[in-house]
Length: 69
Length: 155
Image (cartoon, rainbow over all chains, first blue to last red; front, side):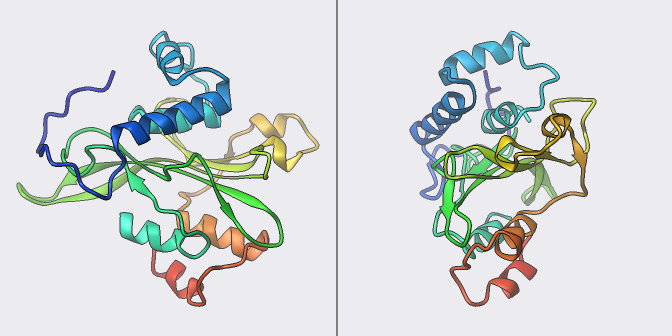
């Protein structure tokens, strides 16, 4: 789970940023491509520590997209 | 940062790098820059797919101004079947591997199996270096005539 932002916050969406739906679709595509699982399942495994110490492109790509890397 | 990275991409692709949701709205936490698609094609002598995932955060300069700092990256080329050829990595989530490194993927068909898992050390690799590699060594056709100048001026 991403931490709630605590810094300078605006509610207005910038037109040149991904929407939440687009970001979730990208996470789904990466989770399916690299692991053959849903993004939700990937996130569960991440929090369960199943990817600890694993430096594969799938883990790195998704860790960046979730703000973990 | 985003503009300079996009200028580098524009040398080989019309796809747009976009920041993750809320990147423009909060200065806290880690953000990401990526294409909407997981990979984008680049045309040339060798069919290639470009994969870009860049993590960044805001660093306060003053109470009202910030700059962006790249904190991680996954910059890769894949073959048309989406098999990874090579991937430049730098990330923070594995304490034993804090250094920038290169992976050779199955699409590179390395003869020694340990090469696919090896973390071949590199310096910090910038997106422009990867775009230049595509044009120089993989035969990717640049989309703009001033690509060399653009890459020289981007990071």
